[in-house]
Each structure stands twice: as structure tokens, then as C-alpha cells.
Image: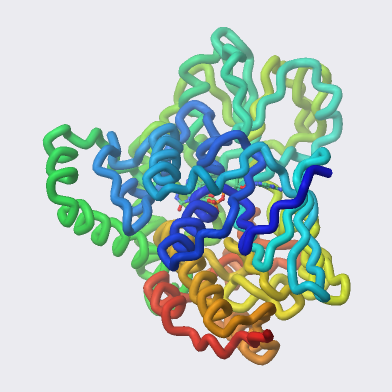
Amino acid sequence: MAEAESPEVVIVGAGFSGLCAGIQLLRRGIRDFVILDAAESVGGVWRHNTYPGVAVDIPSATYSFSFEPNPGWSRAFAPGEEVRAYAEHCATKYKLRPHLRLNTRVEKAEFDSGANRWRVSTSDGGTEYSARFLVCAVGPLDQPRNPDIPGLDGFAGKIVHTARWDHGHDLAGRRVAVIGTGASGLQVIPEIAARAAHLDVYQRTPIWVFPKVDFAIPRGVRRLFRALPPVQRLVRLVTTAVSEVVMVLGIVHYSKAPFLVRGAELLCRAHLRRQVPDRALRRKLTPRYGFGCKRPSFSNAYFPAFTRPNVALVTEPIERVTASGIVTRDGVERPVDTLVLATGFKILEPGATPPFPVVGLGGVELGEHWDRERYHAYEGLSVPQAPNFWMMNGPYTVTGASWFSIIEAGTTHIVRVLAEARRRRAARVAVRVGPHDAFTADMRRRMRGTILAQPSCARSNSYYFDKRGEAPYIRPQSGLYVWRRARTFDLDDYEFTR
Ligand SMILES: Cc1cc2nc3c(=O)[nH]c(=O)nc-3n(C[C@H](O)[C@H](O)[C@H](O)COP(=O)(O)OP(=O)(O)OC[C@H]3O[C@@H](n4cnc5c(N)ncnc54)[C@H](O)[C@@H]3O)c2cc1C
């Protein structure tokens, strides 16, 4: 084990969450921190997901830090490569590079309650870090999930997961199968359809798809955004407000505005009708669960892909994979030479949440604790069992508009507590049981009124739900409320000990 580094704060993850935590620390004058990431560069999901067609699925104006508008977005919905470049830009502009420790995978973190410090071990004899405070900023969409299908390991052709695309593998002239029709499948399927000789798409659950109001942003407009940043901020305000209203009214307060959910479904159905003339095909592509139970998306190219002569939609469940094909439950085997897994990520399970063992007070490992006791954390960030620790993107964090609202609220909360701990010269800070339990009970009560608690979600197969059928990622409140709360929660909800 190499010599230990002992910074005041260790942040794990150099995606947008980790970068934002670093930026906020520097703004508060806290300079003694490192950001560890297993990857060789920053950007998180945008570094890992480079499949053809990858792009944001909310307007780019909203998908950016509120304090760092990007006048350079080429389209209303920016391609993934531009988002990755934006992350690099932020790392440079906000002087985070000296703090980065890349190619450094965290394997375990354990709280030393005698010293009130976290011992953070990294991979393969890497440096061990000892830090007063630990921020886990690893997003939930980081570890690719392979489907549990018999025979997958014996497949003799090429297997590619969308989150780890192999750009050296040419799809031209191949027989390809895509398993999965979620947000990534929706983006990659039209691209593969245009290249492959034949494409079978295996769909378990259809997705609600909106028309995508996407367009190239004219140079003149980009120049205007560069010269007058308030204009772009205004655009951001509008796109964010629209996304927020749709998501909050559609999911959280859906019973107060059922017409909105109904309207969203009607719009998606009309989009499908316009693009797919074949009634039987349309029926297969129509979701049987309520809008809002599963992440919807936007595309103008997804439905037309299924009308191409080289594309088949298979809705019969997969029974097994053979060396050269896929057998469905009706006994039909379809030959395949490239298998594309658009099957998402490991989330809400031990080993994934958190992504490495985090051992707090009394030897409590957080993943096991949450698996046993249900997923919970004060403001989605901290638990009494783990002092000096915050997990970003934790339970009850996902609000309406964009991940950036979640990230900025989370880092505001964390840095407020860190600054207060410094002010009080506290060596240990832990959320008190009372506020933690009250917050958790409030979230669970509010969840009962959301669309996610409705029977119409039962058939959605959504990653929002855990093995108990609960949706503990979603925060049943508006992004605006969470933004305000991060600035106003009572710091005495934490216990500060010298
Ligand atoms: C394809 C795709 C498209 C998306 N599009 C949108 C969108 O349009 N709008 C939206 O709001 N959200 C979108 N999201 C959600 C996205 O996850 C968030 O927007 C956001 O980028 C998450 O950032 P993060 O920093 O929290 O996590 P991540 O980006 O996942 O970053 C986590 C980092 O932690 C590192 N890491 C993981 N484990 C370890 C370890 N043990 N040790 C050290 N480092 C580790 C990883 O290498 C990674 O760099 C999308 C997600 C995906 C996958």
C-alpha cells in the first residue's frame, strides 16, 4: 500500500456530482480535498456512455450548472460528446485538476471512530486515504447491468453493453439483436437500424415517447448567448420550469392534475399513430402502465425504425441465448451475431448502493443496512450510522427537472454542514436520529400520493422500484422546494462534536 494522503475531504466520483462538490468546497475556501475516480478522465456517465445516438433527454439549457451556462451547445438536445467536453471544461475552469486522482478505484471506506476519520482504500495497492469527511458522489447509473438470461455466457458472437460501447466493432452487414427499450435503447436503436443488415429488438416493456423538439442552435443565437449570458439564463429558466411542472404535476401531484398525465399519454399516443401506420405494431409499442411510472423519453427516430424492412420487434419473452442466437418462449430461434445489451444499470441493490462497502459506526455496512431496513437518508444524503459522510444521489433525491438541480441542492447542503463543522471546530458531525426519522416518515407518507404508488405502475418494470416495490429514489417534492430547503434546513439537525 502506497503512502497515505490525508486530506480534509475525499470526494469519490468525478462526474458532475463530484465536480460540483469540488467547486462548492473551493467557493467556501475549503481547499484541502481530493476527488478520486476509477476512470482516466472526468465526466462520469458521459465518459462511459458513448453509444451511437447518445444525447441528453432534457433540453441542454437545463442540463448544465446554473452558474455555468454553456453558449456552445450545438443542439437543443446536446449530443453526449458535448456534455463530456463540458465536464472537462468545468474541471479546468474551476481549477479542479490539482485535486483529481484519476485511475483510482475506491474499494472500501471505513470510519475510524477513535480518530473520527474515514479510511478509504483504493484498488491494487493504491494509495490509502485518511479523510475527516467523505462524500460519495458516484451516480446510480454507473455499473452496467447484464440481464439474467440463461446461456448469455455461452454466446459465441459479440456482446456490447450500451454503457461500454466498442467503437472498433463495425455493425455494417451484421445481424444484430438489441435487448432493452429504455432510455438508452431508444437512442441507439435507430442508429443500429440504419447500419445493420438486420435488427431484432427484444422489448419487455414499451416506453412512453414524446416528439422531440430538437434543432441545431443557429450560430447567431450561440453568439448572442456568449455575448449576453442573461439571455441564455432566461432560456434555461423557461426549459427548467416546463420540465419541472410536467414532472412534479405528472408524478408527485398527479391526483391534483390527472388531466396532465392523460394529456401526456394522448400526446405520446398521437406521436406513435403519426409515425407507425400498422395497428398491430402500434399496439405492441403502446405502454400498458401510466405515464410517469417509468422514465419517459423524446425521439422522432425511434418509432420509424420499427417500420424499416430490416427491423423486427420481438415481444415474446426471451427463454435463452444459444451460441448463435436467441430463443423466445414460443420456441423460435432468431440468429444473431452481435448482441447489444441496452439493459441499464445495477441500482438499489447491495454492492451497487453504495458502490463499495461503507462501514460506519458499530461496523454497520450501509448497503446491507439499507437492504435490511429500507432505503432512507436525511434529505437523501446522510444517516446517523455514518458520521462525516454524505452520499449524493441517495434515497429521495430525484426531483423534477434535471440532475443538475439535484446535484446543486445536494452539494449546497453538504458544504453548509462542512463549513459549520469547521466553524465549530467539530471533529465529528452526524445527523440526529430525530430529524432523520421525521424526514424519512414524511417522504414515505408523501410517496403514497404519487403516481408511483398507483396500481397502474405495476407493469412498468421501472428502475425506480426496488425489490419491495417501493420507489425510494424519487423525492415527492418539487425541485424548487428542495433548492430552498438545502439553503434553509436547520444545521442543528446535525450533532457537532469536538
Ligand atoms: C446515457 C445516460 C444519459 C443520461 N441523460 C440524462 C439527461 O438527459 N438528463 C438528466 O437529468 N440525467 C441524465 N442522466 C442521468 C445522469 O446519471 C446524471 O445526469 C449525472 O450525469 C450523474 O452524474 P454523477 O456525477 O452523479 O454520476 P456519474 O456520472 O455516474 O459519475 C460517477 C463517477 O464515479 C466513478 N466511480 C464509480 N465507482 C467508483 C469507485 N468505486 N471508485 C472511484 N470512482 C468510482 C465513475 O467512474 C464515474 O466517473 C443520464 C444517464 C445516462 C447513463
